[in-house]
Every structure is written in C-alpha cells, then in structure tokens.
Amino acid sequence: PQPDPQPHYTPQGQPMTSVMPPSYDGSINPETGLPTKFNPKPKYNDVWAFLLFLVQLAGFVVLSYFTISKVVQDRQKGVKGNLGPLDGLFSKEGLITLAIAVGVSAVFSVLYYFLTQAFPRQVIKVTFAASILFFIALAAFYLVKGILWPGIIMAIFAVLYALTWWSWRSRIPFAVVMLTTVTSIAKSYPATFVLSFAGLFVQVVYSLYFMTVVAGTFDSYNDGNGSGAAVFYVKLVFCLFSFFWTSQVLTNIVHTTVCGVFATYYFMKGSAQGMTKSPTIESLKRACTTSIGSICFGSLIIAIIQTMRAIANMARSDSDGIMQFIGCLFDCILACLQGIAEFVNKYAFAQVAIYGKPYMQAAKDTWNIIQNRGVEQVINDTLIGNVWSMAALIGGVLSALASYAYIQLSDAMVGRTTTFTVVVIVTAFVMGLQIVFTVGTVIDSGVVTTFVCLAEDPAALARTKPELFEEIRATWPEVVQGV
Image (cartoon, helix red, strand yellow):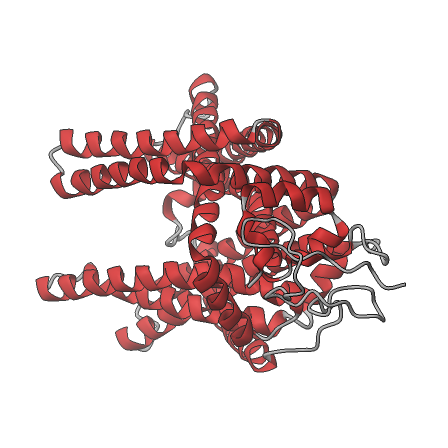
C-alpha cells in the first residue's frame, strides 16, 4: 500500500491549501517503501582512491620493515634510540597510571553522556559560558606572563564568543531538540560506541607503530647509514603523509559507519520495512566496501594539507628569519584550508553514508546545503560541538590529576626523573581527552546525519516520526522547505 500523501507547509510551518509542491523530493520507491533518495545498496565509488591508498600503505609497511629492524638491532646492542622518555610509558608504573587515566575518563564520559541527555539545555548554556571563561583565563595568563599577542588574541576570542552567545540564544531550542534526540537514538544502538572505541584502539596501535618507524628513520640517519639528508627528509615526509592519510581513513570509516546507522534510523524506523537487525554491522560493511573509495578520496585531501603544514612547520624551525616568516604564513593559510575541508568532509561523508554518493558529488551537495542552510548548520554544529569539546578538556584534566595523584601517593616516582612524570601526565591528559572525544564523536556524527537528512528530505521524518517532526518544526520552521 502507498503511504498517505504528505501535507505541504509554508516557511512558517503552517499547512498550505494550494497544490504547490515542496522544494524537496519526498517521493517513495514502491519496491522498498523508502524515499527514492535513500540508497540501501549503493555501488562502488572512487575505487582509484582506494587502490592508491593501498599502494602508499604497502610502501609504508616496506619502509617500516627496514626501520623497525634498525630499532630492534639498537635495543639488542643496548642503545636507547629515539623513543627517549616514552620508554617510561611501557614500565609498570607508566601502564598503571595510564590505566587510571582511562578508567577516570571512561567513567566521566558515561556520567556526562547521561547528564547531556537529562539536561541538554543547561549543558549547552554552561559549556558555552565555560568556553568564554576559558578564553578569558588564557588571555589573563598570557598577559600576566608578558606574552602580549597571544593574550590579545585570546581576549578577542572571548569577546567574539560572548557576542556570539547573545546573537545565538534563539537557536538553542533547536540544538536542544537535536542533542536530546541524538543521545536517545545512540543509547538504543550501543554498538556505535563499541565501534568508536575500537577505532580509537586501532588508532593508538597504529600511532605507536608510526612512532617506532620514525624512530628507526632517525636512527638510520644519525648513524650515517642512510643515503644523505635529502633521502632522509623524503622518507620523513612520506611517513608523515602515510600517517595522516591512514589516520584520516580510520577516523572517517567510524564517522561514516555511525552516520549510516543514524540514516538508517531516520529513514527506516517507523517505515513499513522497519529497522534492519544489525544496522551498525551493515553500515560498517558499506563503509569498508562500497564507500571506502570515497572515504579514501576525502581523507587524501586532508592528508595532503596536513603534510604541507608539517613541511611549513619544519620551515618555521629554520634559523633563517625569512624562512620562519614564510613557514608561519603558509601554516596559517593551510590551517584555514584544513578547517574548511574538515567541515565539508564531515557533512560530505554523511552524504556518502546516507545516499551512497561518490565523494565529489557528496561534496558538491554539501556545498549546496551550506549555501541554503549555512547559518543554521554552523550554529548547530558549534553549539553541540562545544558541549563535547569542553567535556573532553575536563576529562583530560581529570585523567591527568588522577595520574598525578597516583604517582605522588605511591612509590611510582622512586628512581624516576621529573621528565618521566611530565611525559606520563601529559599522555594521561591526551588519553583522557581522546576517550571523551570518542563518545562525543558518536553524538557529533548523529547530529550531522540528522541535519543532512532534515535539510534534504524532511518529508521522510514527517511520514515515519510525525511527533519528532512537529517538535523540530516548532524550533526550526524552515525545515519543511527542504533543500
């Protein structure tokens, strides 16, 4: 049976009596009972990018064979190598302190998650105010220390955030509905969190692998066993490029998978076909097969920018003042480009997950959404993203404090240097921050997917979840227009 025809709405959200069609395509595929836009079985796209990714990964593995062999040989000879203070992380004391950091951040993540679900409006307001206070504190710190320009920049950020808060207050109700909805959906699919932490674990293991390869590269160069400075820098740049690209691919596989889960819920929950049995597994399968080329393509763009920034930072450390200025200038420009590219990628990969589009088409359609919904998109992204950014900062601080308390209250410092303490505490902070961020990534991916689905096909939500649609329409009337 065909679904009942959907009413049309004006921009204010009131039903229209005329026959004017909406600006979006809300048609239904009679075979699946789903919107024609939604493609549960997409084809393979951007295969060339995946093949190129495999080539660079194979090259990195070959290079790692020779460099890691060098590290192993040095250790057998009693040479400490280039890991330096990081060796302490793998001692008994280091591992215990890091385990404490992981435990503290994990508990905090769970508590904070339920807090955002129970009091979303209050959490959004408090975290935004905390961001303003954070910039004020940083500005005061720099100015007291006599570091003028960073202090002025932080003060400007504090003022801008305060002004932004004043102008964005009317947008908070929509952000509250989005945050409440996404956290409720995520709780129904805990496999998304399992996948995110599995992705984090793989990232940590790969990072340690990368550090070992870089250490061996430096050892070979310092021992004079390489082929000169030019070859050394080529190897180093290639290692950085490979690390950036592989890390981006791993991260975006998780993001695209979670987007697929939320898209499946958006289109299929409440439909005649209903939800699939294992939406997370099916979304992961699509991300690693039909969508992997598009993921590699988008990730390649970010990796190239990150590699160029790494080269610019090398120039900044040069003794020549002109090279330092050029490096600083290029780093600033590339940082802006990276921010824009990452923002576009986040929404483009949602398009890839939802509709199975190739990357270029997904990026083009993302730009179309930005042109039509750019203000709401940025505001919603900032308000909800800020919730988990501040949470990650707090989680990192709590993890570092817990690790420091253990070091002080136990005999972990016996025979250890101050450098060991600093390295362990900094690592605990980073791990705590990353664990909370991992939970926030699921929420962020869910918000992005829901926003894209609402912007492109609000009729699907009105048809399958009318109560939620009316709740969203009350806070964002323009949603019924579609893009």
